[in-house]
Length: 446
Image (tube, rainbow, N blue to C red; front, side, top):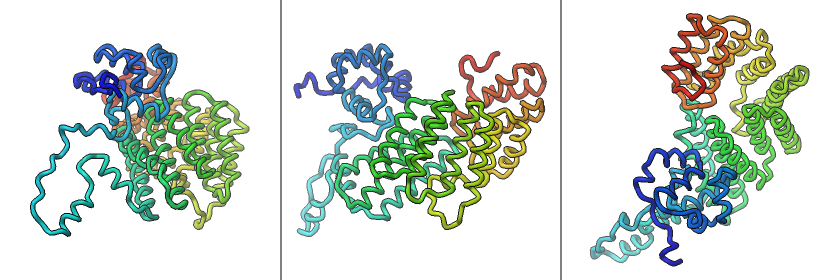
């Protein structure tokens, strides 16, 4: 490659500029490309060449007519423009260790032949050598179990604190596991790695969904779906489709939500050994879709099916780990939320209240989310004092977790208080909301 075409580092002042950092964090490549052009003098034709894109595609991105969501394209942008992987939610790129920081090997003192042989077997100081050594690790079932344990820990921290801070680590591990899939391994190990990669992609998609960054979430959910399809894990494909169905309800696309959860149920029923717990969870997601469509009869039927399947659960069922969260408490609160979505507040309130009383204190996001729904059902019944008190409790939990999804719900509750805006309890809630959650343009009025 001629020196003129060789990727060069971007100016440090650009990489540390808050506008550039934010544009990379949300993967707004229209802004990234414009900043690279104006601050670094790298014009669209050069961007296209460096990132292996067509000039017309770069032009469409800058004009806002196209988004770049595929991971291989994002990785090419990182490598071509020398944007550190962490800024784009990727693993550390191989070129990120500058030659100037490489360890200079000291002169080896005289020693025994066995010592020289031992030193020769160690990796070099560069990152590529170290990663190559890690890749040569002899994978076993215990290695796969270690990966799964780390994923369980990620989910636990996500419940407690939100996924924003976890995302770079999760994406880095995802890219590492996907890299391992390129090598030949025994089928059992290879299939296990595909399953782990699928779960990491779903978790990444979930963190974006929880942050209301829906395009990024959909891209990772699609990646999880493809990884699960490689090993014909239809139960997990159903799980991912159910996540996408839930996201569609948030995007106010109930027909899409119903289509996705119907596809999820088809996958689950065609899989060997699908457990009642999985089918119960999927029926509840179906109830959410019908409720979003305003179909009372279909919602009640789906709720009934969710409870019927749940009653058939046996302790010996080989439930996948990812559905363990769907316990009796979750069934009850989701039943209440489904009724709440239909406007059946009197039915919903005692169900959600009962679940909230028994919910673990460590699940901050769940407590905030469920308290919001309880407050909403109370407000729908003109119980203003109770509703504002419950919503204030939701704020306390929301303040401990980074979840724009929960924050958005609480701002929606504030909007629903419009007819009561001058009541003392509403004014107190507004003051607490302003103190706990940063304002979003247009959501709170002075």
